Length: 116
Image 1 (spheres, rainbow, N blue to C red):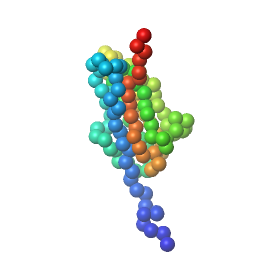
Image 2 (image 1 turned 180 degrees about the vertical axis):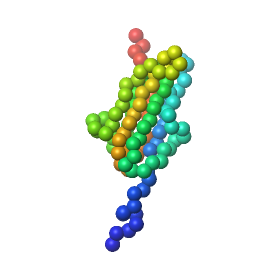
Image 3 (image 1 turned 90 degrees about the vertical axis):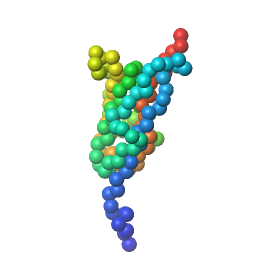
Image 4 (image 1 turned 120 degrees about the vertical axis):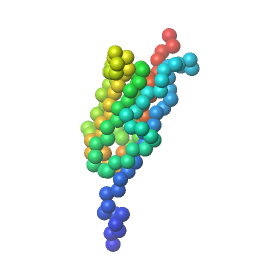
């Protein structure tokens, strides 16, 4: 016998969180911001996940272990100048036809720099 839970398309939550890493202990950079506010984003399976990260320096994305960088449905644009006077860096993460197994923590953080 098949239950309602087996046949229903359930919404799932994608957690978006910022990892607070800067350029060193004396860093005065503002934390990068995600386009979504809060710690959760709920959407239906099959929809496109679109996240934008904006910060004061180059940054990178970390993905849940269930999402592969090689997945053809995943697109991440490298950080490029944006904002007023092009003094900020923006990048986007797009995941087409997101599925329940893509649930997890998506983070945007500043790239480490050399101390030399």
